[in-house]
Image (tube, rainbow, N blue to C red; front, side, top):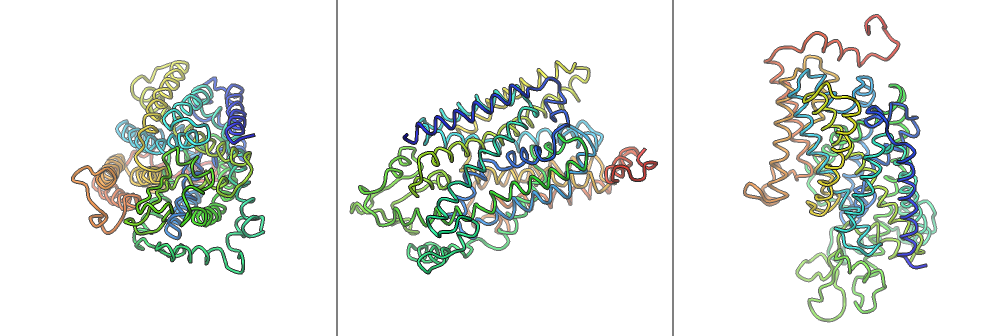
Length: 561
């Protein structure tokens, strides 16, 4: 069978599976819609968290980014993995013990203020819509190549699928759908990696394969040599400044710990100990993909260079023309010799490659079977849709629970709130689709900005809310507003050329927009602590709550009650 037939078959099967699970696990109450009834098993929650966490950026873009950036791309591996550890150890158990539905719910109650709640909702919406833009673009990328529809049509198809199981099932439906999506995406990621590792090194374990040798030369040494020949900086050496590397890693780490769609997953388990267990399981499941990504990056980069560099355009294999139709790879024969010049010098270079195609095109470049190529397409869709669903639920809950239920109409019935949640999800999907059709950059870059926004706004408010009982509403609100506004200003100026625009030379302290979230976070901390020190202490009952959420359940019962 050809690739398209395989793709329709495998993608059709997985979509049917997701919809079937959504129907089976549809939510019948707000508790099931928001937090799956708090009855999810730690292993299932670990699988769902891993799927929620490993978005299109992890599946599609991360290996592609590392493939082009080499050492510099390692910030994504370090930042996202380290950030998850930070979240699991520092925040998740305490937030679960606090027992609220959403991050704005925690901030609204902890800081005893509807204003704080509204600020948190606004931050959650900005973060989630920035993040979901990358996911919907990932969906469009997969559809545009493998199902031979344009990217916009692909985004619309993805919208309808997400709309169905997110609106019908809520967190309950999303959780069990994400368990299936994790199985699909990890199988799709690992199978071609194993095939190509055997092809190139004879070693079936990709993590070991990319450190092995071929024809007596280590793969990384071979890739460094290819880069030198073509004028690129060595793959294993860095091109970014140390301060920018540090700030990007920091933004990704603390941004992870502030992402509302990941945090809410720890509210779905029965007890605090289950939150810790599910965090451990999730880290194990995430590590499978994250330790494989550098190997795929090396395999794809070598195969790409050896396949196209200095080759006749008319003799290129079919995969090139297939991807050329999408507009994500293009050849401009500047000297009219019919040969592809792929070099670092932009005045001579004739090949333009979108970083996001590397993982998706890799099986075709390596001449793997058509079913493997189709499997990767299904995996990319699973990664994008699983995270998009989690983000859309955060948006839905922020509007229906934190705004309508808590502020606008506290007397609303559970049925009315459930209807509001579903209507909010519909509106969120439509807006997300618009962002997917008009994305602000390639997937990983878009997602990195969402992490910076989360770092700048939520992380200080959550950490201080748990560990600093003197932190009050005035400090938290001021910190979140200043941090978010500062990050938005920097992002808009240097990513979208607003406020006069600017070049790399104009970056503050040499820090890129992807890393500026760390700086904005530090400003948030400083502002929060200074304002809190000059304003009244929180009420006594709030300080007692802060003390209690750090006490293990069962210990000092007299103090807890």
